[in-house]
Length: 445
Image (cartoon, rainbow, N blue to C red; front, side, top):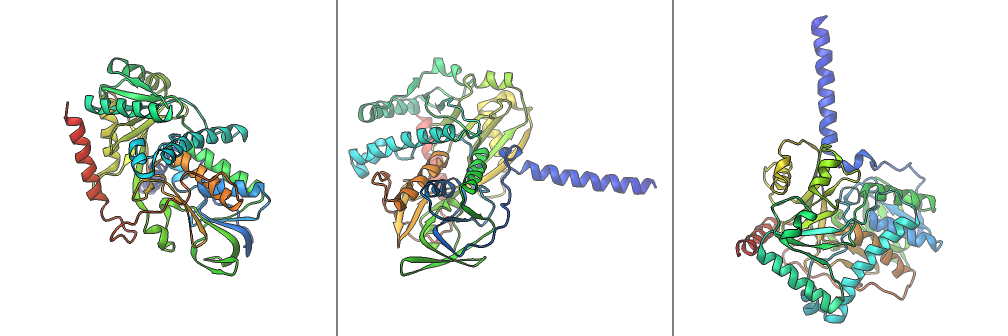
């Protein structure tokens, strides 16, 4: 009898441990809004538009198209919202990687200005969408502080801000060292810049709400449905999936960092990178407020930076970054070390969740909205997809609807990546290069 009770306890213990481990490796966001399988539908063999990918981009495109009475079929190899749309940091940046100076040198002043301004427009459009549709996704316009780790880095921030002010009329708040504590209680930063227009959301709540909206509007969503290939016959795309064939007038590819080998043209033009996050256990509103007085979002003036924020309820801190090593390094500990560099006083706290997803970069780090062989591709958001992915979905739909107001990014071609077949073998090399760049700029005082 004692042995039986012990065995029963042991089984119960290991079941709980397995469940706890599973929960630990799930996004913190899924505690409140976990993506779920869509009820199985009878397969649709025809459509006005087929969209591959049921994240922010695909769902946003569908919502615009459905308003015009078009029949829309979305297919996704997983569950709608399973990828980056329910895993990201929920920071509404709307920035792009190249600086205004770099953009001017590549595209000229007029187009460069339009690109930067479109980010501002896209961010505001997201806010308007959330408010208009009354979506409960914890939207807060709480600003973003970008911390500088050295005087040289901070001087570069000031120069960039002066340039943005002169050419774009965009001014952010320069934060000197004496004022850093008004934004963050950390000795890591010698200054920074604060953009009051950037906000935060609960990303999983947004994508699940968008999924419900598409279904309510009459869109067809098929999960666990794999795109295999397509051929053009006359005016129709013949799209083959593991469920069968569907014929469509238009095709939008919205797979972004989750593009697989069945889409080789796009896969060879995107560099996927692992982005991961951890969440602390609850440390309380007072403690979070003391560390982050404005409860804003945060980044760093680095190539390989941490981004972090309070949880929507203000009781935890969430921090993320790109995976910088691809060996046996413990990524949870790596992010914890990053957190302790910022807030050493948190050394005793526990981590409740660790999770990861993929972001993707075109070679020129410019988001893409292109047409190739009649197929519309929206991809390459460079880690700022909370704003760009929904916006580019909307713009992809507007191409089909013949809107005159095209995106500034429309049909800017992909830059070819030499000797690249979709496997990012060179990412560790690039990361080492960025590490050296970061070390160099921050070692010069």
